[in-house]
Length: 253
Ligand code: UDP
Image 1 (cartoon, helix red, strand yellow):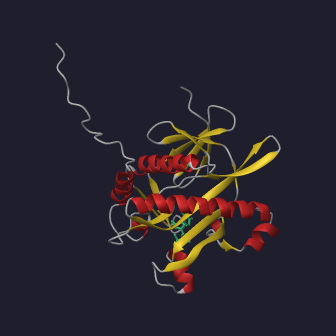
Image 2 (cartoon, helix red, strand yellow):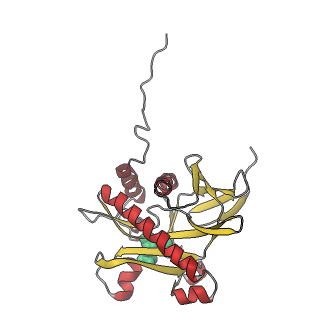
Image 3 (cartoon, protein in one colour):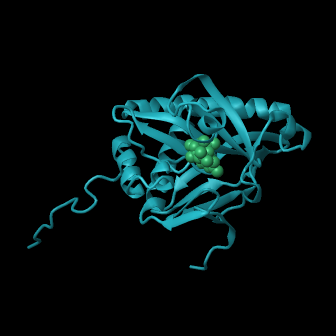
């Protein structure tokens, strides 16, 4: 088979041309980066887990009517997605204080916020994805006020869904990041959830022990990242069970 054309390579994923116009193949790598790629490593199996987990979350979102780019999983590391025009923003939703917010405001990590807070960073690695107010976003034309209203509504629906799913398996959704993209149906533009939803882009804490089950394990050298992601996948029932010896060999006479 002819090798697909590579369109983009990011820190954790590669995008290839899809089989039909308007589609792409998203490949999940094992590379882990943090602190704007100053810390990097290869975590064996991470890509396989994130491919499965993103499929699981996106499929769930589709089931409750939250539009997103996922079409179908193709294999262990690849999924077919809708091509979108990415809005150059990282949309962050926070339920509990952590990370950059806790630092900036001197808040205790884990403090419950009065309500979910949605904030935006401008997607630019060279600048370290700076936090930007809505005023900047509109003035620079990255999105309109209407887009932002739609994005906040989408982000809060994702938050409710993800918080509920995680709560069901004893995990607290502290915060997460999503990206959104534009798709056109004739002249009508819609915003849909794109990129990925995985423990790479969420903070997930065990509800009882507070154990971190997300990329902070890598950022803060807290243990084996792949074990943490496997635990999330196992609790969600996402891992194929009995992968090693599903069936006993049978003697055929
Ligand atoms: N996040 C992400 N990509 C980024 C920045 C943040 O996926 O480039 C996620 C991060 O994993 C966390 C949430 O967004 O779940 C909020 O991150 P924060 O602003 O606290 O930044 P951090 O402390 O991760 O640098």
